Image (cartoon, rainbow, N blue to C red):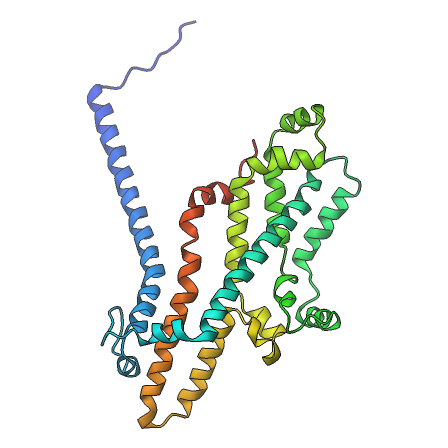
Length: 310
C-alpha cells in the first residue's frame, strides 16, 4: 500500500501566510492595547477630577469651572484636613483598624481552611456544606444588629472588627490553594515527626505567600472602604470610632443639607466645604492605592488560585 504524502508548500506561500498571521496578530494587539487604554482612562479621570477640585478655589467649584485642571490654585483644603484633629484621628484610626482586621481575618481564614484539606477529618464535608450555605442564606441586617446590641457591642470598636472578620469565599480560595500543594510534602514532614500545626507553619504557609498577600489585600481594601457597618452600629456616642469613609459620608451629607439652605451670599462657604470634601477623598484613597505596588507580584498568582490544579 502506498502512502500519499502531502506536497510541501512553496516557500513564497509560507512567507505570505506568515506575514498575514503577523499582521493579524499586530492588529489584535493594538485593539487590546486601545481597550486597556480606555479602561485606564475611565479609572484615572475621576481621580484627576477629584485632585483638581481639591486644589481649586472655592469660587471655581461653586461656578463649576473645574474639570481636569485646577482653577485658582489653593491648598487651604489640605491644610484644613492636616490641621483638623478629627480628620487626622479618623485617618489614623482607620489605618489601625485596617491592620487589625486584616491580620485577624487572614489568621481566621487560614485556621478555617487548613483542616478541610484532611480527607480523614470527621464531619469535614458537613462543615464545608454549612460554610457554603451561609454564602447563599444569611440572617440579614436586623438580626445582626440585635445580636450586637445584646452583646453590648454597639458604639464600640468590636462592632467594626468581629461581624465581618472572615469571608467564606476567601476560605474556599485558601483551601483550593492548600489542595494544590503536593501531598508528598506533607507526608514527608509527617514522616519526620511533624504534627499538623508544624506542617502548616513549615510547609503550607511558606508556599502560600501569593494567596495570603492577595486575600490580605482583599480584606484590607474591604475594611478601608467600608462605612455601612459604622453607619449601622455606631451612633454619636461612638463617633470617636468613625472610620474615614464614615466621616467623609457625613461631610457630604452635611454639605448637601447646608447647600440647600444657602443664600446667594453664602456660596463661598459651600465652595470651601466642597474643597475639603475633595481633599478628604484624596486622603482616603491614596493610602490604599500605595499598597498595590508592594503586592502586585503576588496578586496575579493569587487571583488565579484554583483555576488550574497541579
